[in-house]
Image 1 (cartoon, rainbow, N blue to C red):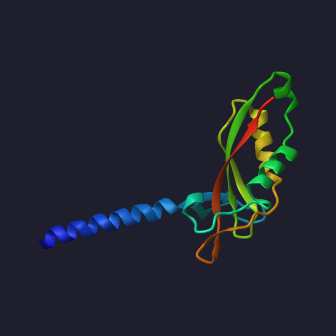
Image 2: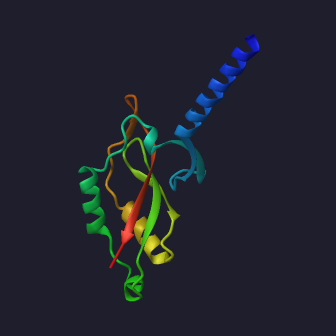
Image 3: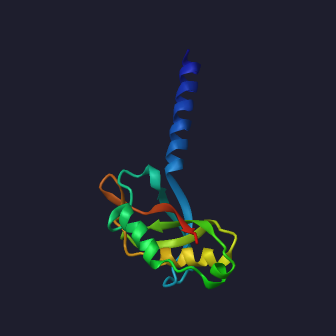
Length: 147
């Protein structure tokens, strides 16, 4: 009976450890102002924070910002290339956007670069929180290019 209880406790602790590890991801970031170029930072996943980061103006403001800032690359426009670029970035504790990456590209490098440029020009977000503490959060955002 005691062995069975220990096995159950071990199972519970392993599940809790898995859930806890799914909440935080280690990401390599580059700070151009620091002496050491790369460092590991722990960031929370968007769905695992108590308060998710928010773009100024909410979802509607985010869509408007993307539509006003995005410029269709001439090369892609000329060849009628369309697509969707799936990007990830980190919203820091101060709301700044950093560590922008393309997760899944459109197949055209100019669309990928434009999506990264648009995200890089975003204003500061309201930071995500766990409890009452601001934490860095990874956000995944699609940028669509349609003619």
